[in-house]
Each structure stands twice: as C-alpha cells, then as structure tokens.
Length: 230
Figure 1 (cartoon, one colour):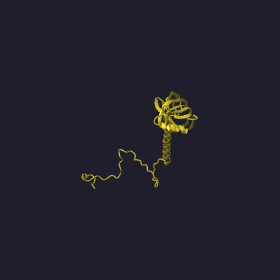
Figure 2 (cartoon, rainbow, N blue to C red):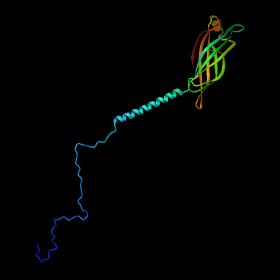
Figure 3 (cartoon, rainbow, N blue to C red):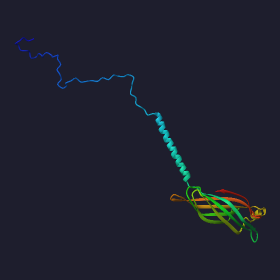
Figure 4 (tube, rainbow, N blue to C red):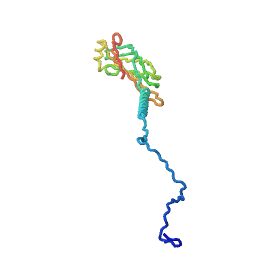
C-alpha cells in the first residue's frame, strides 16, 4: 500500500468496484410472464363427425339413384315403338273353287284393321297392305290409303280384298281336298308402315300382324281364326 505523498505503482490494478454500474441502454429490468403448467391436458384437434360423412354419402347416393330412375323413365316413355295392329273384324264375302278349265280360286273378303299408336308423339302411316296366302303361296294383296294417328290414339281402317279366278297349279290337289273336306286354310298378313314425328325427326316405324284362318266354302263362313303380331 503506498503512503501519502508517494506515487503509486502503475503496474498495480485499481481495486475492483463491487457496486454495479447501471447499463446505459436499459433503464428498467426486462419483464417476464410465467404461465403455470397443467399436466395431463393436451390440445386435441377436432375431427369431422362420422355421422356427417355418412349423411353426405347417403344423400349423394340417393341423388344418383333418383337421376338414374328419372333417366330410365324418360327413355321408357319417349323411346319410339312400333304401332300395334289388330284385325278386329273379318268378313268373308265369297269363296269359290273352279276346276274347269283349270283349278282356280276366287276370294272376296273385307277386313277392319285397328292401328294403335302407343307412343307420346303423332304417327303418319303411308299405307296399309293386306296380303292373302294359301299354303305359303301369295295369292294377292290390297293397299289402302294412309292416315294420321294422334299420340296414344287409335285409328280404324277398312280394307277390301278381291281375288278373281287365280289359278292354283302347284297346290291344285290340296285345294280340291280342302274344298271337299269343307275347310280351306288361308293366311293374311297386314302391314302398316309410316313415320313417327319425334321433335324435329321423322323415325320410320312398322307394324305387322299375321292371321291364320279356316273358311268353309260351302256355307261361306270363317270356321277358325288365330292372329299373332310379328
């Protein structure tokens, strides 16, 4: 330790100061906030409800089923179909078998044809053709004029068929046998051709029905008649 009046040794460090000097940059000490810890509790993320998912999937499935059913119904009602043709009345006017000079046949009959348009659009048919056959051989035909059938409507057309003195060469023996027996088989084929007006399109359609009948040439009556659509 230096005495008064003596110079201090420059190699000796000055005594440390135990007093903290205030920092020139902070006027107040920093503040801290402590949060208490809650053990056993964790944050859970909410997951979507399973029932909500099932409801969404069920509604989507019901929508698809309803759309499919609606499309199927529209195709069922709007898809064009052939008209239904029926023979509602058959009138036998004359049946005559001649053996001289050759075996020939004369037939005269009248038919009433019923045409039913099953579609939801109108139908214009060009003609109705009625053919008559004997044992698969065509004897003759008649063509009637066309007409108009409204949507879901019915039309009745009369047709007269006359065959005078047509020779039957190949089946002459069978014709004489059927005449003697009193039952001559005939087949009639009725065909309707026309166009269905579907919006801006004309769709060709066709209806056909075949009838098998047995007539008695002695009393000029129809013994049996069976019709079936083709």
